Picture 1 (cartoon, rainbow, N blue to C red):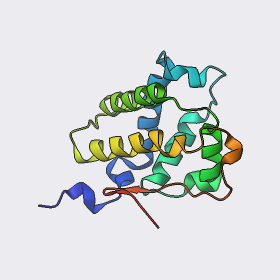
Picture 2: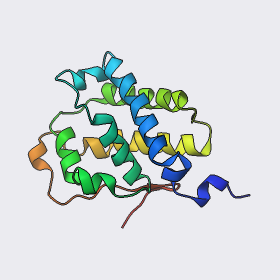
Picture 3: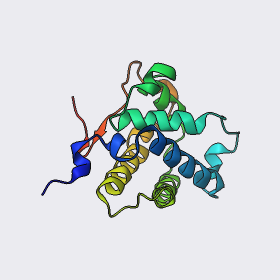
Picture 4: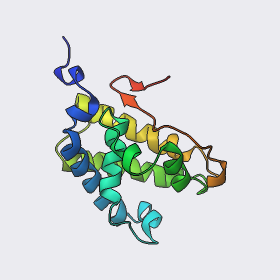
Length: 156
């Protein structure tokens, strides 16, 4: 039997733009308040962070190219996250905050959509956002936003 959610993009199954904004807002509230992850926001928070994050996740999950059109490419995101060294505890806490945010918006793990969103966020946090731990200067120009589908990372 086919899961009806898989007949659409992860983005659409997660509620489209409104779903991404709700999830980004819930995650943002949790990480800013977290004693470990909150350190990443200690220098202040861009007032548009939730909107940008929702656009990034949306594009990565099969939605429109809003992030690329309005904010930048994969290289710009990698540079923001680059040069911070390795931080496994922070990453683990960020993923836990994401799982809590999924609960907050009514899309828990244990469902097709919740599980694929968790898998995406865990991969993005532990892999894509940690690809350049030594320096943002190591990030090459022209990186695309990695795409994620029901089956994981979209290659080529």
